[in-house]
Image (cartoon, rainbow, N blue to C red; front, side, top):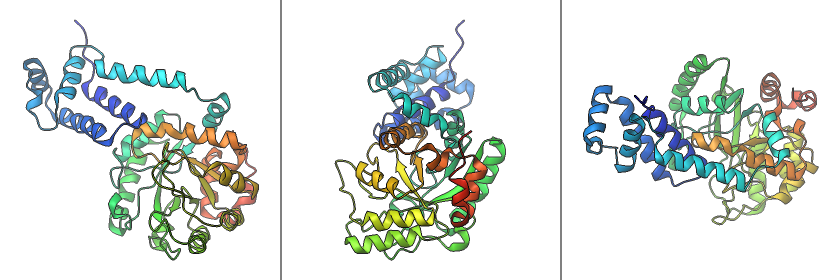
Length: 356
């Protein structure tokens, strides 16, 4: 008799591959919701409904997900899952990563920018962390949005305090893998940060990004970004231009001032790996490199499959000639955390730490 395939695992793998391919969110959420329904169903009821074709009577189960479940229970690799896996292999073959980018990706010890269902992500904290671990990382920094970004269900003080408790519990279960605390904190119009200093001080890594008033005048935007970079709590300046390729032009600011400040203050410039961002543009990345900036290659993942997007940032860094030792997530974790605790005094020592 053919052994059944775990239907929940099959649905979760479909979610991962859809995320990786950048498929529409509604499709991803539909299969994720189906996985939740199947996970909660008693095994005997699951088998009975799969056998008599009544899975679709359950809220959250559509014809496509019901077919996946039935094929899995019959011991087959679901046809839809096989199709997605084949497409992923074809895409990897048609647009292979360069050997240099692959080598750099292997040096990355973690990812400093990720989101979960606590804000606008599509996966649980634990799912994001276990996927990062399975991809070979030593750590993942959870950086859900701050409260100002209401469209992303950002975290206020109370929700962040609750999240810190959950992160600690998940971290204990996943040790020796490290789940680090963090936030993508909004840079307000006057350069202040959208979180109290005492909470910022508790976080392992803070990414600061502009999400509002992206068309503000260049001088004001420059001052806004420099003030944020100057905060002792800010470790990484996120997606600096705010652009969305084909949808939103980059913000205007004086990059000489911003990158000079980042270099002086040891605030890393993010190389954002999301396909629709790929921020900063090549000319600004070259300029930041010339000023001696540190960098972080981040996925900005909002779901498990998107954690694999770091290779995009690696390609960008390789093309610009960014040295691996200037990329903070190639450093040993102790060096990374020493830098985030005291950027201004630790930089000279830590930028010379070679990846091992």
